[in-house]
Length: 501
Image (tube, rainbow, N blue to C red; front, side):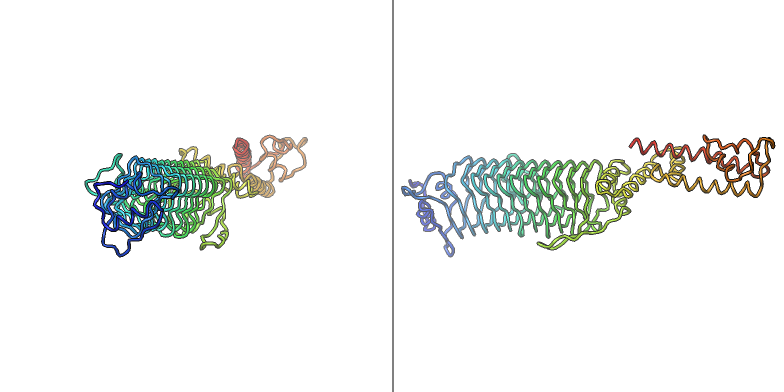
């Protein structure tokens, strides 16, 4: 039934008439605006609804004046508004609706906290100059924000409860989406995009999007849950921090050919996140620290050309580590050869200093790939980095063990040292023969066996006690005994460390 308080203009009569039939009304060229209160009454039970008809609001090219107040409303018809401008922020807080589609519209903001949609939410190619509030909303279908431009210019004197943090363009904390969430193909947010605690049942796509919030986080999505993949590829740009702490991504977290320009501290924070695979094949080196501490991933793809200057890897676990170069859309990403020396430099980028776990994790990766020599090289470097944290006596002993047996990872070094000292002793005892202690019982003089008997602290070949060095060879004999004990101790210490690991 019609509201007696209305004084309809021609544009409003056309909208009212078409509503009951679900017909589209295009007001292009009309000089008459459409009052928001007219639309609100239509959507909450008004309008001429013919029996058996499918009522719907399908409005194009209108100027909507006043506030569209649909708080707590039950909207049972589809809503499609295209090419329209709103003078006031539409209010859909705690509303329940079938779907909502805004295309090519200009809005000063959108309030839809606790909105419940059975279908899709579409905000396509819109210009929104104030915050879009989707906190605690539920969308039974897909959310599409492609091509829209959002800003954080909240209208003055129009408070929001609970308040939105200043500088937030999209507030979607704890948003629940059954399908996909798409914000790509030219999507721009001048202000923070907040998805903290949000749940997406499909994929979250930010490919080609631009998020700008130089004063803080461009994307803040701690404890975000995405059943499928989160992609921010091919031109995705974040001028501000990207925070995904404790996020859970079922498949890929993909930043292939993206640009990350951290603002406050972190270009990318994945601390405590759990993902299937991570693609860090960026278009350029990120500005700011990248934190992967506590990240659990099956596979990490990265590119040495864009490794960050500061990289936190404490507690990061992965099964495979693969280097790939960025590539254009729909082209394969070519492999990049990476040496173990480069990977060790990758580990040294931690601003927190030395910790053993990243070295152990990298060594385990090499072992799993059948690269035992590379694994030993990583573990040797771990011991050398640890040595720098010890007191002077520990560092000195570490240098000794490293030089003699490579902390047990290069035990063949002990053999080289033994050969060198054996050669020294043999030459010395040959040039300056020792005197027999008991000529009647002394075996035949053999400089090589005498030197070997002095070098081996446990084995007795019968030459050490039978021949007495004379002159300068006394010092050589003492050196051989000392070297034998030191080498034996170093070998035992090195092997003990290896077995304990």
